[in-house]
Length: 496
Image (cartoon, rainbow, N blue to C red):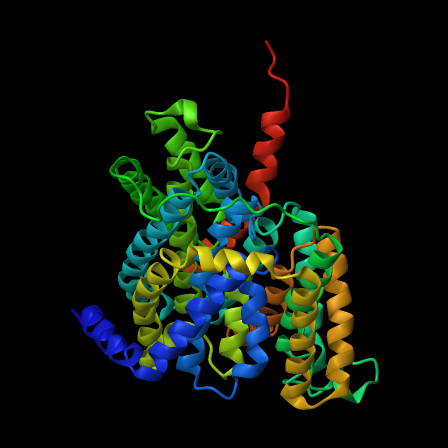
């Protein structure tokens, strides 16, 4: 009952006219950027960070989550019509959805993606509503040793899961940790890694790194790889036939069942549940001959899993301050920009923000369904924007936002350097999210490590004698050891 009462108060916050307006703006922006190939939710939230700090935090985060959800909706349009997934989680949608579009069933593919996103997003938000309070209760038992062990787990999972190479992920993580150490040490007062530059004494702003990696670096990469894509026209009614409804509703539910729990795991994400959903639908379908040629189940299930995982990602972010995706890492940076730290204390100190944000997800899902079903032809027109103008506008907006934050030319130089580094990282498949996680959580983990050792009088066994800390350390070690071990066992020849 306490959860329902808190949610009711959240709806009172989210239903305020100004918050409804920002939810709508976020939904429109998110859908628009989701439709545009190469522009994702992480890049959009990164661009908005410098210009939203004058807003109230509740309005900003309602808009950010609208962008996050909206991009998941809009990404299906690009995947289906031009077979260009904006994110790795939309690969399966591109495979089956584009085949449906080529067969003249593009409208049905877009409809099942939109309705499936609404169903999965709503059910996953219900899961977020009732799972968050128990996780907060657990997190309240955390001390410095537990928090350091949790951040160690975050470093391991983010560097191992985000990206195709564990080594590249680790290099990105240590680069981020190095960036986080720049500036004056708060405990000793000594300058670290400043190269004698006064501009670096306060450290490098997280916003500069976010905008540099995701706006500048990603845009330069997208511009260098740009190619003209043929847009498959939408034919037929936007409403599905009774047969298509019958074939879609079970995949929606199964996709949600895959997406939300996996997305809520520290090593979760949206890619794994989408592939699991696709494999499950392929195994359970009564129309196996259509798979690979445009099976509607192959769109309905993965799209539901994708959107359910997006809500699942918010569980560890809000309750533990643990980002498990690039967009979640940027949201964590946004929280810190307002002087807020996600976690159990946030639920106690700012319940209006947390529950207003959760309530806005229900409202945003309804808005997105209304925006996506009848307005699909309008969103397709965005695909006609000339790419040079689009990418040029993003770069101008990024540099203006970065300069306006502090009116500093030094910030522009740092932004250019980080942007070029981001381009090189993208070119050689180094994931950007571990950089942000390392930079944001690195200083926090250093503080928790020092506190834990101070309490234990320098005894490092505190990390293995406390049950929760020991469990987190064991999980971290397992993530490092088990996958390579299993891979080696699978490759080893079987002796007769």
